Image 1 (cartoon, rainbow, N blue to C red):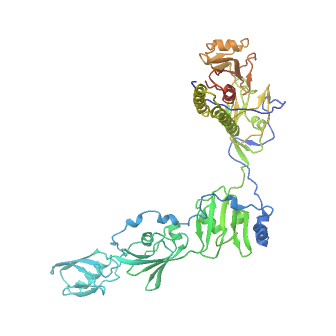
Image 2 (cartoon, rainbow, N blue to C red):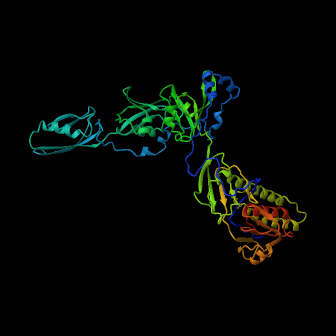
Image 3 (cartoon, rainbow, N blue to C red):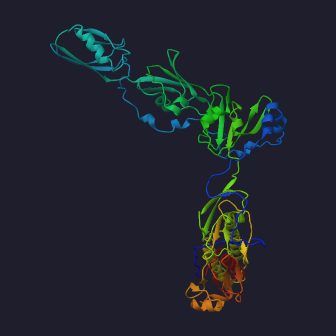
Length: 577
């Protein structure tokens, strides 16, 4: 069996009709705007959740798994990410491979240290050139000059210092040039809550991040990103808060020396943040308690956020509260609390599209309670060009339902064929061939994507249904054409003739094909209604579909396949051979 799929699809569903017709789309009292400007959405209140926390009445209820009136179990709002808690804020700093991108230590702020090599040139009255090494006392030695103390002198100042010492001896006609040639590596210890504590070699000018990365980074479960100390001779010479670096790029410039210690302190009190935020991480607090505003500044919630859920533990036991966003900003958070930012205000404005024959804008932003008549009263039309008695709606929810119904029918068809018993080898071969054809048919039929046609007009009456977000209201053009398709030799559009019958239109389209089911012809009205009646009166804008005939000699599941073909013809206004 050869199966062809036609891509143009319109789903079908039947709704109840009203007895009141919209003759000229008279104005309605409901406000409808053709722009996105909307009224302010009222703020929802939930005082019981706040009061329960202040009074401590949440404790017993939460331990027993019972929610107080007005409370929401915010644990259900958490995404199932497979992790108990989000990663710490700043953990991605140690994700790159920058530990291999190191400097040579030759920068202007580098402090000269024992072991460094310095190149010295003298010319003029005295000629001298040599590479000297800074000794353990921090000196370099120049003949006829003596030792010069250069330890802890910035690399940018070493030329000026040595030149002044030389010219104190050679006062006339001597030129001097001094340059730091190489820097001596240093050995730094890393300790505390890091992945691989120990001793690491680097340059004195290497950054703190370089050494932390060499050690595997900060332990996300134990280490602090807000208190990292650099110790020299058991004294703290610098304390670093990496949040300053993450947010503003500020990082203290530390020149390391041998036996310096980088100590990562234990993690401070932390708050877990998830939901509708730009930064869903675990944030450390500098103090034992923090306000919701501080966490919001770190987390940066999305503009649509309306409510915040908080759960955790206090001295009296576990708790959970659900607060409006403004109330959360003043809420006090403690170590271990989990915060979920949530968009819990349902849109009070929906967008609706208009297509077909109309005048004016094609998109409307309307109130959620708007009905079809209310919107139609704001859509001007040209009566001579518009079939305003055949309006229908394309709705996404209907399309999804039609798609599911078709899929269920195909599943039942496949099960009935694959599980059919065979009493002989010959019958088994027939069943196998039949199953193969059914699979091909089902594969093509599953490609049908209904658009969700909702019939709202019949005999001039239009149902005043409630509109949904994303609805497309179709106001058909007035037409004198009849579309003839399906199992005809030459599918085409034929001019309407009020005296012609279905047989006449089929004849004008070349007649039936060999596979045509001439007893079951569907007529799709302009308003979406489908009629199976070969004696029905043809109207302007109708579509005539001739369905294919299923061979009863080769197919056992003739009834099921025929039913599905009818479903597709009705739901999609097309046929599958």
